[in-house]
Image (cartoon, rainbow, N blue to C red; front, side, top):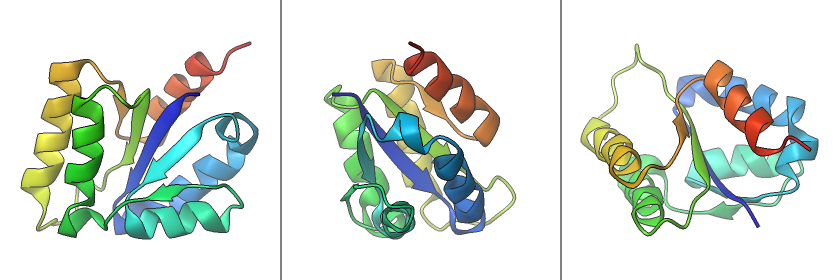
Length: 122
């Protein structure tokens, strides 16, 4: 089964929820993993999700570890490029791990849509 990690900065959680609702039938076919607060939002869409820690307290690192072990098919990370994030080093580490291990990562809804459409084309 495809494993997709979902992360969203606080200012991007509404966009992430809209994206999930738009793609809910496709995402039902995957095992979803999310950072803590994002995971609660995913659950509120009716989807099942494995929740990790909140991003700032280690959730980003947990997702990065899964990527390093090649246990993820992709990461959908709705980043807020204009906000300040105290855990920015963790965010950079996650993106570096994806590059090192060739894990697709989408950092905005347009790219996320391309990945999901390509991954679930039938």
